[in-house]
Length: 519
Image (cartoon, rainbow, N blue to C red; front, side):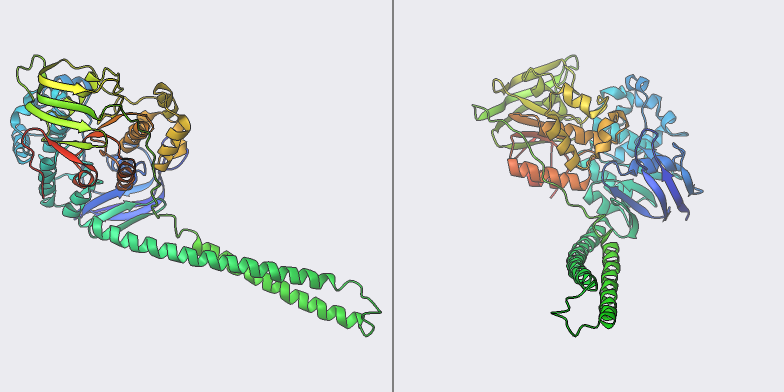
């Protein structure tokens, strides 16, 4: 057992206006299975990088354990090489036979190690990196969003694997994964940091109770402050009126008025009332001080908006005995696919990693003959029929964010987005206004994904195609997205492995290959 002690930690990026961490102190145990949660951009990945020694900081982080971090950074030149040739560069001393054993547990054949890494699907790449990570024995693992790009079967395998580990830090927004795997939780709230024992659900239940109590107390303090202000105002008016009455008197109306004794009495009365005003002001200051901070960590997701178009045809997309593969590969990813998407339907594609879900999306995009950022033209071999309605306008969210460059303003101008609405949506999704002038290369993955999602929401379209939109997206933003889609009911084609999101949003599920969804 070892401790990781964080004392008076302060850290900021050079181009940042605010500190990511400011005088932060807490301790965690390396025997804990620690879940790490918080909104996008709050510093979860940054903290893991600080543990890895990637950045300089003020304060101290003390630990005598060695760390390993997921996901690994894959150098561009490795994408043309099979993973077997460079896994030892990702993890020192990594043995290939151990990686193969882990791949088997993750439901993947060893042959993926001998294919060029760049030809693997995002899910296959994730599994290869997890297999390398899990092939060690003594490292304390820092696992950052391991289920992104994974199908539900692989997520279940990762869940089962982590249940048998001794200790780790797991950053995730997958509530099912956290509940199954962790025994402690570290939370980056809006203004505070807390560590407590238990699962995500137990923390969420406690947070809900605390938030409700804070709202009640805040309303109580607000009313008390209003009463004190009104009482202070009235008492102040009386004191001022009394003070003014000391000066002069009317000898006809006040013929028995004793100037000296009268002024003394009035002065004492005025002083007493002024003292009462000061007491009320002190009470107001105390009430305001107690009120401050009550709502600082409460989450109140704002309602989002969506700008959709209505097509003159009801049937927007259809497939008849459709098969798809890559030219030159000689084999099809899938065959005999049949489905239709009509206006108002939200269709989810279901299937294992590598079955062709993203390839189908690319084929649909190419059929619309519309250039979409983040996609490249692919040479496919096809059979059967894939048809789109004429003049179909598509709004697309890619699972890849690596193409995002420059500032948000530049991004919006290139896409001809209505700037005020685009920025308003980003702000409602908790992207701070200070981020708007920064380069997106320095954004967290969650913030980058929010840029793509906000751009899609403000793009007028007949069909919204989202490829794994929730990767890296925090729980609160997922709730916002569910609400806006249920409210506006756009026509959608979606690939997403979040079971709860699919249950809430999908009107139809299309299975590609062998897809058995969990109960």
